[in-house]
Image (cartoon, rainbow, N blue to C red; front, side, top):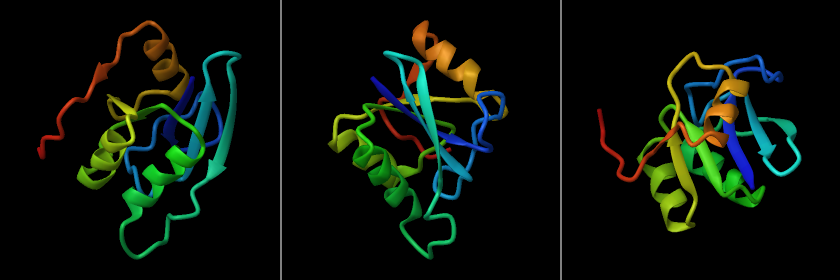
Amino acid sequence: MKLFLTAAGKSMGDIIDPSFGRCNYFLIYETEDDSHEYIENPFQDAQANVSTMVAQAAIDYGCSVAIAVNPGPRAFQLFKEQGIEIYKADEGVKLRELVSKFSKNELTLIEDYIIQ
């Protein structure tokens, strides 16, 4: 299963990037063999619809799960339409910890987007 996370840097010791659309990197993590890849976000400087473009990238990379601080309503809707599960991440948490929490079923599934 492929996980999609927004990453502040290119290390599992880096934290999740709280900015979904304008994150520095995407982390694509394969749970079956623990392989992973960091991809520089090509949409960081886009003018509009950034979160939707990032969500579409996750779909294009074949991810079935997204872990995010706040994907935003449009990305959330696109993920839901495509059957992608979205899990809540707290700000400042390291990527390796989030992957571990996911594997232990310790993350909260976001079922409805509520603007806070």
